[in-house]
Image (cartoon, rainbow, N blue to C red; front, side, top):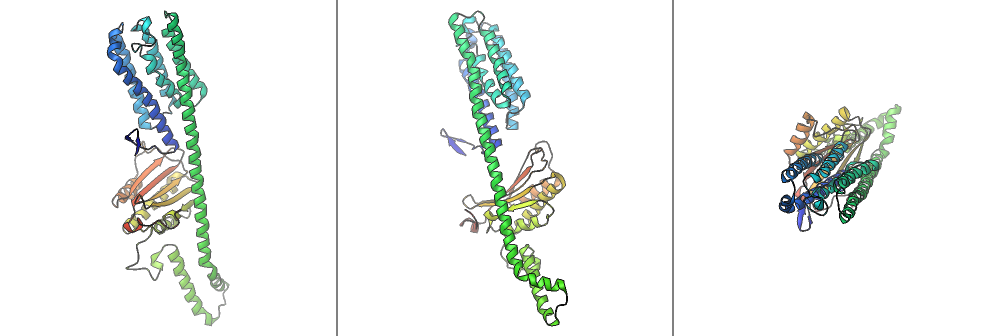
Length: 412
């Protein structure tokens, strides 16, 4: 939460989804402010209206349409459906054309009795948000300005006609300003999203190279042993020592891969497994998937049992879902730790076919093996997915007290 004007308000994420939510807030906010202004002036407007009942009827229809479109965009957290954009434009045009039915000619400019002009300015803002093509925005503005002038100019005095023409330009002005702002924010968020993806790929590549170096250090001095066994004809006096060395190498490899059963030192009293080792063990079961790991920022974070087993099983379930359903060409497993915030975070993201979380019921894997199993250990799971644009699952859990006092190894 951030303080805005002394009031607590949620901070929007700096992502394309956050920009769309911001655009919804601007569109809805302009409309709410305009309607609130009319509410204050409504007693005078009703008193001066030539047909108060008709004014209320038109207002009621406009409020119903505003409530419907508001519910849709708030639920979708975006205003991108052009059908609603045209519906709002047509409704606003009808409201403007109805103004002469309940207002006298002198009151059609500069008066809240003719409330249609002020309240339909938000439609111009919405057109700049919902329509991706400029010609569609221009068409919506033309409808609004045309309907306003058609309702205002007939019978208007010379001064009122000039005022009406000036007011008509406000539709274009609001649309242009909203278009500039929303377009800029969308480009900015797209650039930021691409930069984050590039940073994740760079981190994954760096982690892969470091992992390869560790493997090389592990195997370099033991290649000769493997070559002797592979070539056959090992002298009898070397057979025993070489077998002992090969067994030690096998134990080291098993320990390296996170298999305590192959490590003679593993057993009771060993320290708690780490988050990194748990993730590596989980990913190691899915070598057929194009998985890249970026785990350095979580080095040194302990993950006690039984939470460690739950996390490994959950990540395994997510990767199994990728294998069975996603059709992904790229999967990233990223881990991070925030000692100041007292939590760690793991994301499993793929570029597969995705799905609509709101319309698709959770399967057994996500519902039971991920969300419910992790919740039992105080670990939250969030699923974000868009059809055709992949899936991202974020796991967040509490850091043990010992890990909150120091930065994890590898942290910047």
